[in-house]
Image 1: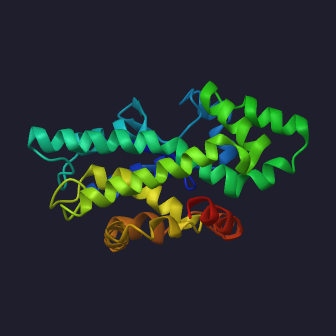
Image 2: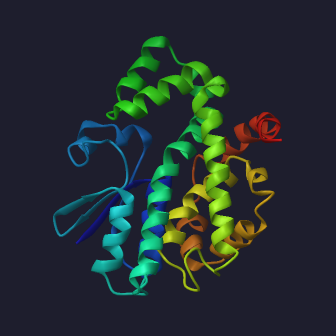
Length: 257
């Protein structure tokens, strides 16, 4: 039995769902709310209070990059990893880049879209929200985002880091049809949710200098796995991201110009 715990607004959960869709694997879906991700019931499954969590025949697997690698190894379907050791090294590099850029996309999301609701809460509710984050570094970053907003050094650093991510993608895609060669792989799976979130937040202007990445994203959207994961079940926070992103974009554009 294969079970996936995820949250429809989470980039890492989307990464896992895309991998499962690409492999054509059936699974039992446990779609959580934000509140449920922090609940004692879910923490008994994943003490880090993050998604996704994959459970296969009673064995629990954490961390999305580990999970998508396991999915490709454990199940039949199209291979999502190359056979050549050198190209495999390139794939692992992209999985590492995706993990490195996750806090950046989180900072972008929380500063632009989530902070307005958070700062409207009572001080004790804000503190409860912050203290509910198990990871100390994430807890400190979230506090800075809430207290400082766009003035936080995390925000400027995240924009710079995401532009570097897009530049790395552009350079690779100028040489290859997909990120590491002529075939779609887990490297493309891993980067898709990050670029998807940039678009959800109405920050597609970040890609203005990266036309090849834009073309890659259009081809990603044309894949059956994208329709399976986002066409059938759009991100419920998408409208909120879009509304707040439109307000934020003039500031971000001035920052990068």
